[in-house]
Length: 77
Image (cartoon, rainbow, N blue to C red; front, side, top):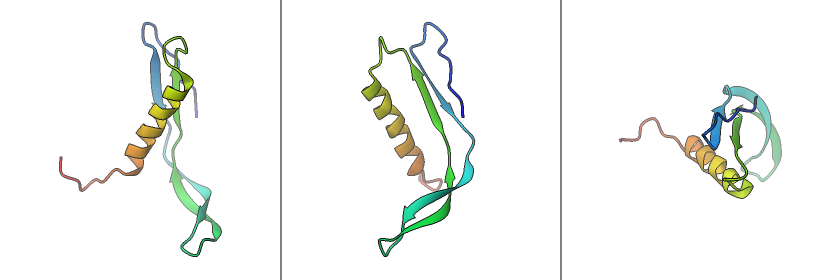
């Protein structure tokens, strides 16, 4: 995990970490919390707060994560 550094005149940068298997608490079909192994990746986003609001930056990272989590390799382009 790291923090990407902005190179001026850019106002933001996005970095992706390695995908690793990590323990995670999930809810199973019965509604019980269990610990399971899941693939996890850190996404880091740095931006110039004079240009990008923190809320907007967080929404951007969430949208990228949603796209990656729903990625289907068999989908036609």
